[in-house]
Every structure is written in structure tokens, then in C-alpha cells.
Image 1 (tube, protein in one colour):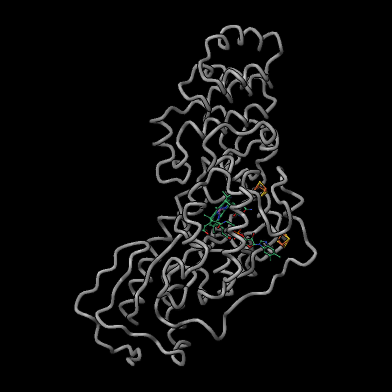
Image 2 (cartoon, rainbow, N blue to C red):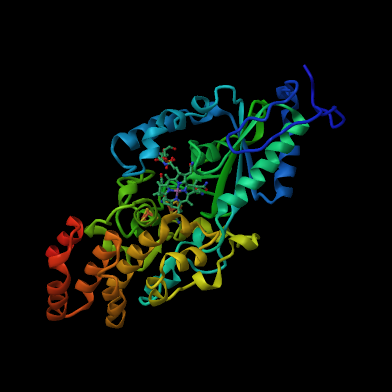
Amino acid sequence: MRVFSPTSPSPAKRRFDGEGEVARAAWREIAPSETAGPVRSAIRDRALTLGFDGVGFARPEAVADAGERLAAFVAEGRHGDMGWMAETLERRSHPHALWPEARSVVVLAVNYGPDFDPLRTLGQRDRATVSVYARNRDYHDLIKGRLKQLAGWMHGRFGGEVKVFVDTAPVMEKPLAAAAGLGWQGKHTNLVSRDFGSWLFLGAVFTTLDLAGGDAEGHPDLCGSCRACLDVCPTDAFPAPYQLDARRCISYLTIEHKGHIPLEFRAAMGNRIYGCDDCLAVCPWNKFARSTREEKLRGREDLAAPMLADLVGLGDAAFRSHFSGSPIKRIGRDRLIRNVLIAIGNSGKRDLAIHAERLLADPAPVVRAMAVWALSRLLPPERFAALGGRYAARETDPDVAAEWRHA
Ligand code: B12
Ligand code: SF4
Ligand code: SF4
């Protein structure tokens, strides 16, 4: 069998161009297990040079339980309207279901640790709180580019076949990262790191190379008797430690959920308009966190504590230019304004009512409905009733009409 050596000739032309795509070597060059250590070191060095902050290696078999737990999560309906989780259940449940030939997974992490208190703005009621990960550029672009660079390099240097995955791919990144020794899945279900606390983005390179085993498999659970993350959750989204009901999570409600946000969660959302960091931010392991070295992941000044009055007036074009390159762009103007109106309804600021009033005739039902709800909280009953007289009778959308009736 051909063993890696730095002077090995490279195949004449190798092409590697995409997430989930296979880069095929002209010959198959599998690093035998006795050489896996040096190959791992070389991959680790390369990954760190490319800007990753954490690197680990796992065998696909190391996450055997994760598929069953995912199936239970979906069977309970905890994925809500993230239908893609049910659709990709089979492929998502195990790395081999996705790619039977994979022999190792290289798990990569990027530190996005904030240099500010992520919960600082929660009490500032005329301002919005944007979760840390969404305060600047979309991390997918950054990580995907680096994963492709690393995978292309691995393929060129060691042969084998490689595929890259980040976030949207049907891969269970957290259990893989834990198996690769990058940290453990805390009671809030996210990966916690001894070096970076709660603030790691994850991605993976699958390869046919045999790299795993040896020094870096698995990580002990260091949560102990702590339950800070479970207790802080504003919407009681953890049915048990290590389990999340996404339907109750503000991150799901503000980002993934397309329809009207159920009444029972609106007050608890406070001024969180995109994502939520409460369970991450209270973790005591954040004492080891450090702020990110990525300029593109550092918080944008204008998203540190944006005024609700400025956000609520955004039309489609302004929304798109304001959030160009940001993860927030993904949810579109209507859903963002829906979330902002909930924050306005929770603000107790009468002077913000005028902005909600202007949206009572907005073309989007999710916006009109939350304008009604916000006004019902801010205006005196007689003023609200007068508006109802003008708008409720001509409302054609049944959900918005119901919002008027219930208000
Ligand atoms: C779907 C999804 C969501 C959903 C569901 C979240 C969830 N916890 O499952 C929603 C929209 C709510 C969400 C929110 C967030 N997300 Co998200 N999300 C994903 C995604 C795409 C899939 C996750 C998944 O498979 N969930 C299904 C469940 C079943 O999987 P699980 O949590 O691993 O379930 C395990 C536990 O329940 C455990 N378990 C069950 N019972 C028991 C019992 C015991 C005793 C034990 C030990 C374990 C255990 O076993 C299961 C399998 O491992 C991943 C990317 C990816 N491809 O993996 C990103 C990902 C998990 N998200 C991420 C982030 C950053 C977030 C947010 C912080 C964003 C924000 N600020 O708003 C929040 C955090 C909310 C939270 N507390 O989890 C990061 C997390 C990085 C990290 N360090 O872990 C990921 C990995 C994206 C990335 N590429 O970096 N997300
Ligand atoms: S992200 Fe927020 S709402 Fe979701 S589980 Fe954590 S604390 Fe609860
Ligand atoms: S807050 Fe406590 S229980 Fe939650 S993940 Fe961190 S250490 Fe574990």
C-alpha cells in the first residue's frame, strides 16, 4: 500500500470544488493506521494555519447513539416545522448513511467568542438583542471556504476521497465534535469546550483516509451538578437535561419558524429579535472563552444594540442592503419585522406604538398580526378599539382577524 510521503507525486490534475462533493484521487492512497499519527499532526497544523481554532478526529462509528436520539427527537415532533430534519433523517442519523466509504471525520471548530456581554441589551427595552453569531458576516461562507481549502489540501497531500460539511448538511456535528474530543455536549445540548466555552462553530471533513483512533477520541462530560443553562431559559425549552424542544426555543421561533409565533412565547421573547444566547452565555466554562480573532465574526457596531424604531421601518430593499452578507438576511424582511414588533410589544414604550400602527396595513400577514399584538399591549383600550374599528372589519386573513378578536 502506498504510504504518504511529502515527495509523493501528485496526480496530474485534481479538481475539488464543493461541499458534499467527492474529490477523487487518481489512485487510492489510504494512510495505514501506524502512520495516522503523523498524518493527523500534519492535518492539525494545516487546519490551524488556515484559521481553525480546534481540530479533532473521530471514527464514524463513534456516534452510534446519536441517530436513535435524533429519531426520538423527530418522532416527538420537537423539530417543529423544520421539515428538512425529518426528510433527511435517514442520511442524517449516521455518517455512514450519508457516505458508507467514510473512514474518518475531521471535525473543525472556529471560535466566535464575543468581546462583550451577550446579555447586556436584554434590559434595554427600546433596543433589540441580536444573538452573537448573527452580529456580523455569515459564518457559513467563512467556514465553508476554509473546509474546502483543507479538504483540497488533504486530498492533494494524502490522497483518499474527501467531502466537506457545515451546518446545513445532513450531519450531526455536535456528537461528532464530542467524539473527536473537541468538547462535550452540555445540558443545553451544544458543544462546550474547555478552551472556548460555548462559542464554537463546527464543520466537518469526511474522508476515506483512516485517521482516527489513538489520542483524541471522546471527551468527558464536565457539566457535573450545574444546571445554569436549564434554569435561565426564558421559554422553558428543555424537557430534560441534554434535550431541547426546538418548538419552544427562541432561536427556532425567531429564525426557523415561518408562521405566526404562538402567543405563549411572545412575552418571554423580550427584545430578542434574532436567535438567543441565554443558555450559552451563562455557562461557567465561558471563563475560559476568548474573543474571536476573526474580524468578520466580531460584532458590527450597528448591531450591538439597534434601536427598535430604526429596524421596524425597514422595507424590503433597505432590509436587504442593511443585512447583506449577514445571516439575518436569510429570514427575509417580513419575519424580522414580525420579531421586532414582538419586541416593541414587550417594550412598554408608548412612543413606539406609532411604528406598529403604520404596519397595520402591511401586505404580510405575519407583520400585520404582530402589529395588532404590539398595539394591544401599548395602547389604552379605547385607542386600540378605535383602530380595531378601522382595520379589523376589512381584514381578510383569518389569522390576523383572529389576532384582532383575541386582543
Ligand atoms: C437544528 C439546529 C438547531 C435547532 C435545534 C437545536 C438543537 N439543540 O438541536 C435550533 C433552531 C433550535 C438551533 C438553535 C441554535 N443553534 Co443550531 N443547529 C441545528 C443543526 C442544523 C442540527 C442540530 C441537530 O441535529 N439537532 C437535533 C438534535 C436531536 O441533536 P442534538 O442536540 O445533537 O441531540 C443530542 C442530545 O439531545 C443528546 N441527548 C439526548 N438525550 C440525552 C441524554 C444524555 C444523558 C446525554 C448525555 C445526551 C442526550 O443526544 C442527541 C444526539 O447527540 C446544527 C448543525 C448540524 N448540522 O449539526 C446547528 C448547530 C447545533 N447550531 C448551532 C448554534 C450556534 C445554535 C444557536 C446557539 C444559535 C443562536 N444563538 O440562536 C442556538 C442554540 C440553541 C440550543 N440550546 O441548542 C451550532 C452549535 C455549535 C456548538 N458549539 O455546539 C451548530 C452545530 C451549527 C454549527 N455548524 O456550528 N439550532
Ligand atoms: S437558545 Fe434561548 S430559548 Fe433556546 S434553549 Fe437556549 S435559552 Fe432557551
Ligand atoms: S451551563 Fe452548566 S449545565 Fe449547562 S452546559 Fe454549561 S456546565 Fe453544563
